[in-house]
Length: 498
Image 1 (cartoon, rainbow, N blue to C red):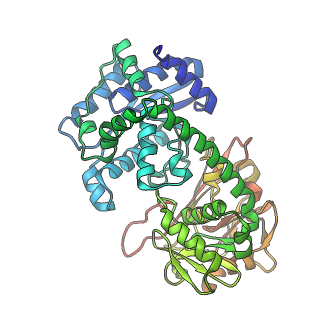
Image 2 (image 1 turned 180 degrees about the vertical axis):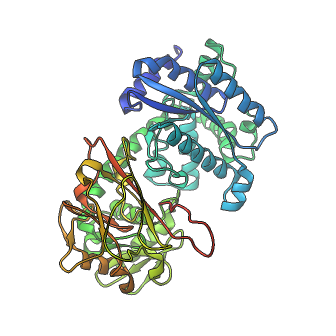
Image 3 (image 1 turned 90 degrees about the vertical axis):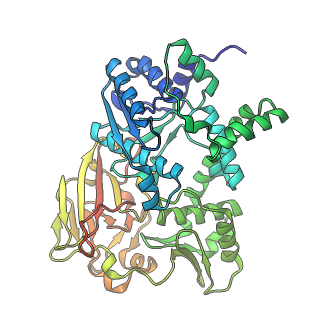
């Protein structure tokens, strides 16, 4: 078999999936290993063709004695190649203990948080990482062994929203993987051909890590059954990704008729509409509801979803089914409610506007109440993908700045208020009915802030966006809003994360 032309393959992947916005900055995550070194070298050769600027980013995880030397290697390489660079340090073991994550997961979260912060600092809408075709095969096998549906078996995407657990900035960058169609052997050949001398990470051969056992033990065994297993698994992942996208689009089309109310603490679905869906879309609706309330949750297990789906079809009114991450499904007479276990949120935990209505400071910070909630706002030239940024129940929101306008006001509800909830295809709903259906405590409704322009209500703050100013494919300027909670129990105020 003829050797792969890596440059041509990366160019084809970039073009097919629109990975590089022209005239922009791309942050390239570089560990110093062969994958990231190959990626940086290829993008360096392509930067004039796509009119992009490159910024190198490296995070020292402090997990190996030689990690400081690796960081110095990357910094020196970037300097020699005339590229700006940022080197950071993370105490991954401490992060793993604090956030109760495995070392592997903590390293991943730390790395993506760092890359997002670098992208924000340099104004880069895109971050490129070096995952290759063999990484894709390993990922698919990992998900298969752990139990996954289409979402997991499709593997990694060439262009993806930023991982929710690592969303530290607004707008979040887009994650791209230009090497995802290039096998590891081709990358190693490319490095030799171009005199690239990557650093060696000895943890890549330690069999204590699940991925390494798949790479060094399981895949070689599977190749004795079928020498083309890697190619076949990649093809399967591509096919399942298309199937998943088709089902996701179908669910989006049903969603306006299915959802009754959405908020940061609950999703309410209509029972009859749910029962009319095929099983695949029923599971999808439950997964979407869980993810809207627990956006940092990576894996939503099949047993939880299937048990809840069956209960939604046959369980008597009043049944409560346990879901992941402290959520439950509550079966009502004509509705299904996904919410946190326990009572509804206390009014003190819900945004409140105290005092007269006021204009939104743009750009800047608008206090909703003394020592209370606040909204930070700015206009940007990029925004997270619409399907992520416009998810209901978020504490961050991205709007089309031109559709929203500049005369933005915050006020509380008035008799007869109506708005066009996101996802309902332009149909309107009374604010009063929405608050009831969303299970917003009665004591919190009178002071819940509404963001309004001359076009109408844009946002029931912290709960549901309106359709009228959401970003569109031709949007060019974006209004980014972040809801900031008050300080609690003497701790400094921290930015809320969706």
